[in-house]
Length: 302
Image (cartoon, rainbow, N blue to C red):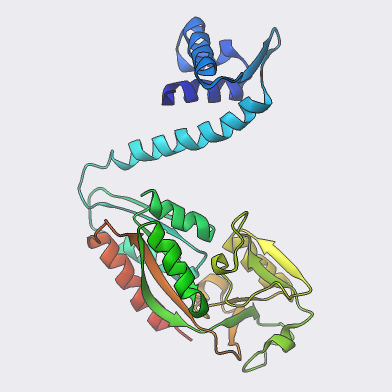
């Protein structure tokens, strides 16, 4: 199997036709058909049902397309990554959903004086952040680990040859809108939050407690809202009486002071830090990014 064969299959799927795919890829239809048939023989499956009306994926073909899409995407990433010729002029970061990480990244972009560079910041589920670092898709990942989960997470990371380096320690804070019925409280406890919707990030199939981003469990909440991105979280917080629990660090520029954080009455602590492959060394970009996180979060820390 080759990347080119995967590209052929994806184009046939997108166009619904061998002839149209061949036209768009500038190859002879016979060559395209022979290549796909060779792939089907190699894998022992049938990818397309062919008819005079076009080409339709089989059940096995639909599964193959999912894998092929990821494979081609990774191939494109590798090609684009190494097109940047200037050494040390790239940084790829995967992170859980933190406003101050995005701000630190923006600072890195602003202060970058390289004539050429390639920088990337992607917010993902916890498992995917770790996975990106494991397969070297990202140079560095940002995650938080609850104190009670340190041992199990360190074992999990060590098995993947990944190290965790703490940057800052934080205690749980409740984020809610300034007009929220609880906004006048100086501290909050679990009992006071009963009845209000709890916002938490979807972790997909990897929903173990040590992968959760929120600093208290939402399993006991009567009302839970699962979201996947910060923009949705911000909109729901601004327009409802929902709340979420995080670091307490949120740049006011993002919400114009309309969302506030209130400390929780709990002894729980989290370490926010960065993960890297144990065989990888930091470079100037990584060092500046980490320093920016430390400096920025310290200035914003509640």
